[in-house]
Image (tube, rainbow over all chains, first blue to last red; front, top):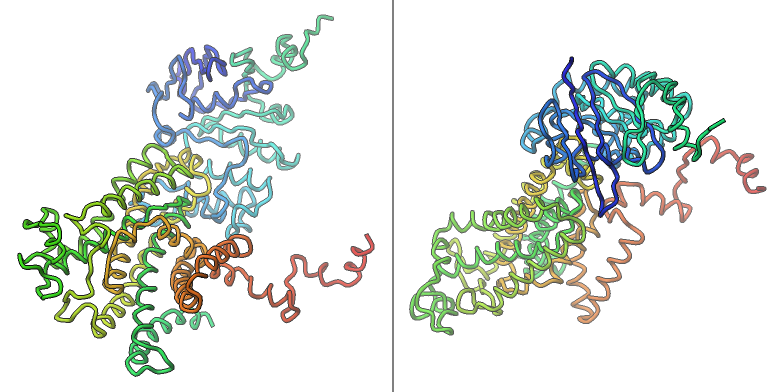
Amino acid sequence: MQNSILDLDQVSVSFDGFYALTDLDFKLYPGELRSIIGPNGAGKTTFLDVITGKVKPTKGNVKLRGKNIIGLSEQKISRMGVGRKFQTPRVFENLTVQRNLELTASPTKTPWALLTKSLSAVARDEVFKIMEYVGLAPYAKLQAGSLSHGQKQWLAISMLVAQSPDIILLDEPVAGLTDDETSKTADLIKSLAGEHTVVVIEHDMEFIRDLGAPVTVLHQGQKLTEGSLEEVKRDPRVIEVYLGQTDEN
Amino acid sequence: MKLFKRLVPWILLAFAFFILPAMANSELFGFSQFRLNLFGRYFSLAFVALGVDLIWGYTGLLSLGQGIFFSLGGYAIAMHLLLVTKNDFTTGANGLPKFFENYGVDNLPFFWEPFWSFPVSIIAVFIVPSVIAGFVGYLIFRNRIKGVYFSIITQASLMVFYHFFNGQQKLVNGTNGLKTSTTEIFGLVAGSDEAQVLFFRITLILLPFAYLLCKYLTSGRFGDSLVAIRDDEPRLRFSGFNPTPFKVIVFVVAGGLAGISGALYTVQSGIVSPQFMSISMSIEMVIWVAVGGRGTLVGPIIGAVLVNYLRSLVSEALPEAWLFVQGALFVFVVVLMPDGIYGWFTKGGFTSMLAAFGIAKKTATYPKLDFDESVQEESFKV
């Protein structure tokens, strides 16, 4: 059996007695592509918060390549190879598109390195390739704040690609994108899987089907079920949490 | 044109360096020695404004405690001057600076000792504020204190320093401060015209270096990280950056610049006193930067010089009016010129103002539509 790259063991997160996650077990293997769905308040974002170090679990273990990462700062976990895209496209609005990417593409992120060394030609080429691929090249010198919502989403994802972490966590990557952009995003994400391990949280079922990846359903902080999208859709419990009643007939 | 734009600041600098002292010397166009000295002070305040711009304009941390570092630089140079000068005005009967006599102090307080040496004092001017800024900054930033809490803590620190310096007559002459105008430096009396011209020129020589240092810090990926901290610090953490050292470095540099500023200001105003640590002084520094233009580096220099020049002019005409003018100026800039004077010019504010008066052509987002009369007519119908 292959070693898991990410391993959540009996993780619970409580905010003043309210359990956002309850005894969650979750395993991720290198190169895997995984979708996570669940109704609002299922704990999807808290799940990412735990992995990226934003929230410290009340109970349980989180292991990255066998190493416990609980209590480490966000930047340390990030440097260990975990990248995250937020629900809203968070980009550095007062930097140009190119500089957004070059900043996240920096291999060493200490002040001294950023002051004295310029970005290697290889990394700069990589940034240009990414911009070409996602169609942001014409906007390279434009401030990220003046991009449209869809372009910001793309930039946020591109920043992750430039950062090139082992595990890519995407929180609603296609929210507010057109159908065309959505299918293009699906292609991009599929091409990332394999080399990277990718977790996608999304509400858009069409998009989840496009990805064709195993689906984990979260509900009230617990894992409801796991399987392919078709299997999951047939599961009466999933229908219940989404529609609010069991389809007995 | 581009070359010309690049040369303008240097031409202005050269003009200030060579012509202004000559004009003051011959009282040309009513430009007196007194005026020259005032301009020297304004330029020395530009250093602290550059520091405020780094920490506030670029990194987004509103420090209301720059007066601490400003005063420390001033005290460092003043202590040195008081120690080494031996004349009837500054030296008491026991060979120590005269004010010690008033409080019956016969032994020099220990922390005065290093200031016998000129090089040590010059280094202390920026090292002491930097070290304190680094220490305070590290504690604040490591604990992820930011926003308004950072401002409050820096202002509280300012009060602590103010009360310490204000209360310690036996150490630093308390509220009276240290008077440097009667001391001697380079064989000149610090308050004399020759010395003042010298200080004026030293200020102008150092200013480009301070500017270039800030330029160097803000132009590359380091500068981008600062802007990123301002825009979205948590996001930066998730990209693997630790913002703490960045913020500490910027705070240290800003502190050092404030120290240099304080030293230059002290020798040109002839005194350093705890008044430099008053709350209003530190807030004024922020106003200069806001008026000049945040995050532009040239803006704060313009702001510091212009606002203080205006202050002198207004105070000479209507002594009571300055505070009202200053308040109005701040409100005006915040409401109508959020990018400050410099930002307003560089972002096309001047052209749009001319356009408003019908002098220049309006700029259009979609020229084909905006200037197409039939389209314009249609939009009016709706």
